[in-house]
Every structure is written in C-alpha cells, then in structure tokens.
Image: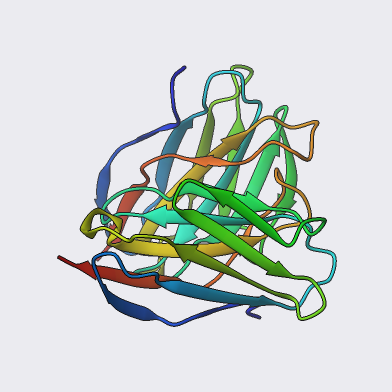
Length: 114
Length: 112
C-alpha cells in the first residue's frame, strides 16, 4: 500500500508569483484535503476534494484554488503569493463515503515566499 | 476562531514518565477526536482516535480519555521514551473524513 506523497519537498518563490503543489493520495483513497501549517502552529484546513469536486473550504481567500484528477491525485494552486503564505502545506487522503475513515497525511511541501 | 484549545504548549518529562496533554473543544457537533504526532520536517501521523460514545481508548502506550460533558479530552503516554519526543496535536471534526480542526500543538521532550 503506497502512502501519501507530495511534491516538491521544498519551494522558494517571490511575492506576487504563483505556485502549484502536488499530492498523490494513498492507494484506495478518493478524498484529498489540503492544510496550511505555519511555523509553530497547528494545521489549518484549506479545502477538500471528493471525486473531483470541492467538498468544503476553510477560511482562505479565492487565490487558493485546487483540482482533483480522475486518479484522485490533487493540486493546490496559490496565486499572487504573499509573505504570510510561507508555511508547510500538507495534504491528507481518506476514503469518502464513510464517516469512519481517517485522514492520513503526506510529508508536506515547505513553501518559502521572499 | 480557535475551536480546539490545547495545553500545555510544551512539556518535559523523564524517561518512563507519563506526559498528559489536554484539549478542550467548543463545537458540540464534533464527533471524532484524533491525536497526531509530528516529527520535525514530517507530516502529522495519526496516533489514536476516539468517538464520544466511549470515555477511554487505549492503543499500546497511548490512551485517550474523553469527557463529553466537559467537552475535554486528553492524551496519556505511558512509559514515555526519548523516541516519543515530538509535537503532538489534538484535532476534532464532525466525522473522520471531514475538515479537521487542530489544536495549537504540544512540544514534548522526553529526557533519557
């Protein structure tokens, strides 16, 4: 069974640029959630995708957008990067359709905005 | 708006001690309460989770105690080891697959 993978591991961008982060869900999972974890804080929910549709969104502006593909992998896109976007971006996969299926996290992508 | 409050922020115990981390939540619609362990540079790893129909759950050296009326739950680590040194997060959600609301984290250090 393959776990959740994310790419790239690290990324450095400058303010105003755009970035795309990628996530491959765990085998058998069809739901991907994205979280932002600022240094020294708990993860904050950005949004969730279930069967290629957005299935919930946290308190993040529209410049944070996402996609889920037919193979259930996912992308997180952030436009007009701001300094405060510097964080560890985590994706978590789960199997939708049951309330008893836990979320399993990938290793994250460390984004630094200069 | 912080819906899950976690304490303490940091904790130091000797090897073999029993660190206890506490969390309190506000939203009574929450019905799933997991604990995650995170090492530096890694993603959170699910340790143990509980639902409000039980007051305690034990898995290996990790135990969750749950008090529904007080809207509080806690993690106990029995016979703690230096390898347990990590940051621990409690979380809550309306079901296992839904949006998780995390506490602020507790940095645990277990001294040899």
